[in-house]
Image (cartoon, rainbow, N blue to C red; front, side, top):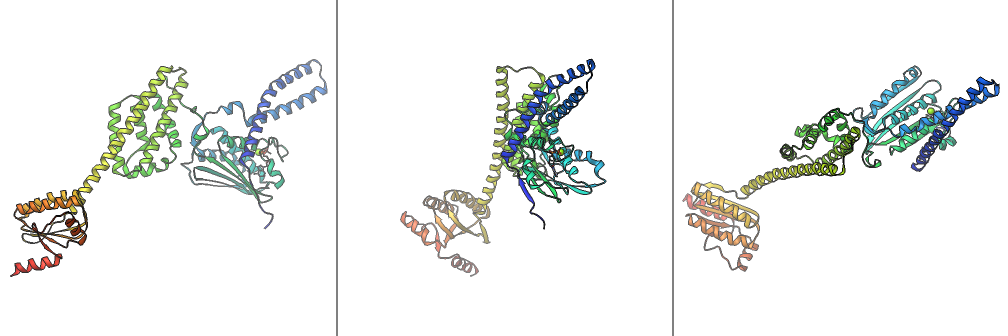
Length: 517
Ligand code: ADP
Ligand code: MG
């Protein structure tokens, strides 16, 4: 092995400083360029009047200076600063940029490996980011003097998109490493030293990170780490690239920009977007389509349909046991994106909403969304409660199992804790069964009952009374000492209402034998 590979993780502070240096330099360049351009004009006039070789030299030097300024401005042009955010597929952009280097492929092998070809959706300044990757690829190709390979890998981890650009080029000497990204730092004869400055500025603006590994004569890897969700670095509303509609109608505007809305929504709902397919498979719920429907109901103030829709959705989410947190995140994302769209609608129409209008709109829209949420949750919980209720009924039914053993004789084995509620259920079932099946002897086995509540004992006595009124005889077996204690403490007895046996077996032996005789 040769030297240790340099592992240079450029710290955030350093990136920040470099980015500011780049921006300051660009700002100065902007100021200086105009007077220099005038000087250039005057030099030309002067040359026409009295040609002089010194003027030629001055002009050539001035042109050099202007070119340098031009390069500097490329890094952070004021109009680039103003670039609107958009949401796009990073992999698709990277592929289109790599395409520009096709003429190099006779000498440099290009290998790409994108894990999320379709889903590497990020929000950001698209042109700036395209330029960033162009600069990185250009450096990688330039670093390979003869033949070599460039790998471009993409993957997503913990909310970040990683793009790795790895070349088998000349590498970067250790002592030069700290200079990467500094404006005008170049080791190339015709280099500008502005490429990486643009890279650092842009990635920093997007809240991302850059890591560099390099080894001389082996190669260099640039690791670009971009957050998928940049909402935390955005303040307030975001200017979106949207289409205007002539009619100035809100609904038409939303329909016209439906794709932008969806992309934006996906970039906001970080956790839900990976679940869209799953939710579609499980519940046949089209989240994106439904979001569109919801938004239209809201802006058209179709309250009734909205409520019906909320009910239906609530039921569907309950029915398929879909995670409720996703619904909340989805709705919150819809609310944010809708407001952002309303802001942009106002902006591109160029009309200014007055304060009164704005607050009325705010009230109407947020009220409707709240009502949707209410309706949704009510219908969700109702559905769940109904399911619980019916399960409860099944359990209650099962907890009073009346088993016929021979004609007119049944066993009711009780287990677990006996409380008032259970007695209530038992009463109904016992009376019904006695009358239906003409039961004459009912054996209640208490051997599985550890606890019997005081109130339940009182109720049990009433049931025994009822059973005897119906002409049926009760036999109680297996009462445990704990239960007997409770009854004695309460001064209650059951022996006058039922025959008792120590165990179910004893009772059965007795009754079945008696019958056989
Ligand atoms: P330029 O390409 O015009 O020199 P950059 O800012 O793009 O300016 O790069 C600055 C310097 O960083 C380069 O001159 C080179 O020395 C070094 N560098 C950048 N990328 C690589 C790379 N992939 N391999 C080796 N050196 C690199
Ligand atoms: Mg470069």
